[in-house]
Length: 205
Image (cartoon, rainbow, N blue to C red; front, side):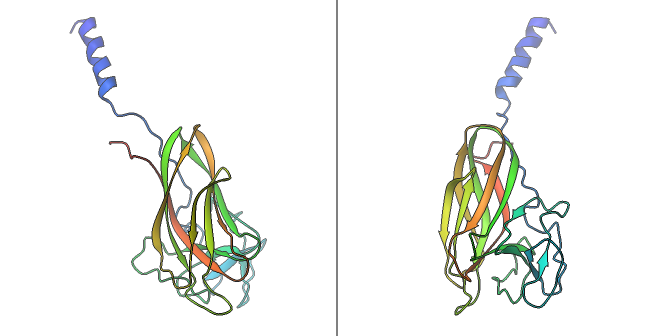
């Protein structure tokens, strides 16, 4: 094969190859990398492990592989069928979820790497507490990228885990901070898990 023909074929292969588009990598997207230590099945973020029947705490933030940063007030993790009254987990692709409970804007965040400039879709499962009265699920959850709101969901009690999405764009590659915040003050709780970010539209493989 002549050098000229070889160069032509290489140029054609480059043109036909799909464009490279980043798949951002979320560490511990289903909140299952660190198991809840308390037999209650749930725990707030706290500096040490303590497991009373009410108000258990666990230091998730400093646990290897956790990936997320939970706010110090009103944020933590739960499994199914706890006294936190999360929605049913049956048939869902996760066994633990983060909760955002009233207080002072409870939050969970992560610096997500692997972006290139472009458009993306955030997706996750979101639900609310299965209870009314003093402690309900009437919470509002906001999702933010680098402090900019990309989605807001107003929940009422007894909202089952539902897959929700929010489109957004970034103008630079590298790392961008994803954050979820509970906006409604008081004992109102939302739950979320299985957080995924994909290119929009997804590139051909």
